[in-house]
Picture (tube, helix red, strand yellow):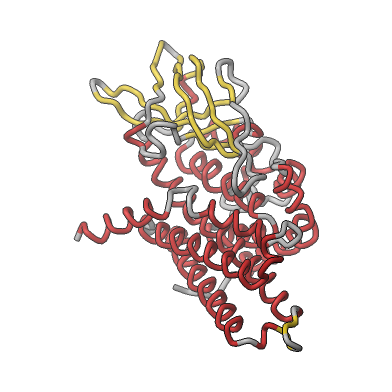
Length: 379
């Protein structure tokens, strides 16, 4: 793996870092406290092209690669995990599937709007009964003449209440068989509605809600890809989603580590900085090492994806390690701050909550381990 970044990758990383420090970091606590979707910030990032990093310039994107998107996401998430998660979702779970599987008409219709932030998207797979299992999707789409009619419900639709279009997965018929298909559904479609926003533990600004589909009528052109191609769309989106989630987790871990390091240097105990205590030094050394290990796995997965090689297990490893590192680093950061680490005045309690969510969304740690093991045991 080549660890040398291109000039374009470094430029986007540096731009994201600048925006994160100047515009986002100061608003993160308020976004978390009020569970407020940062719409004005997302719109600003859209104007910078950060919502469609891999989309070609002809459709309003930056025309860069997954590695650039990963670098950018970590920087944004280090300032506000919710903002980082929203941007990652727009890039890898909305724009990428449309770019890879959409018709020319779908790409020309949706990508320019999504790339600039004029419209936002969401990804509707999870259901209350089957979770994220594609074999457990109970939402159905039936064909009637030149229309598709969708019926069902979805859970944990992140960004749903703020989105204008949803990628919705539903079961369709292929002869006598049930197959998985995906649809581009405008969220103002009659029969589509969202429930109240969930009151979440972390990533609170990346608001999520349930979705109800009550005989939603769509034109035949709403089908994304071919009928029955939902599993392939889900695989591609899932790999990107796990890399994006890993980048968010790294940003959270980095932010928690920065607070702990600064606090350890300034906090005095028995006449000396607590950073002089070996117990604290060991914690800081482990935290830094773990973050770098997670970052290397994430960069490997992003680089492999850009090369077009299979990244299923690599993406799962990156997401598994980065999210668990985030939780460990954030927990240790709270410990370094002691009682102050439990106060909302200090950001590590927010990082602690955000980090835990990174172990859950885009597939739990247990799901990642199952995926990794399935690849290992094929041979």
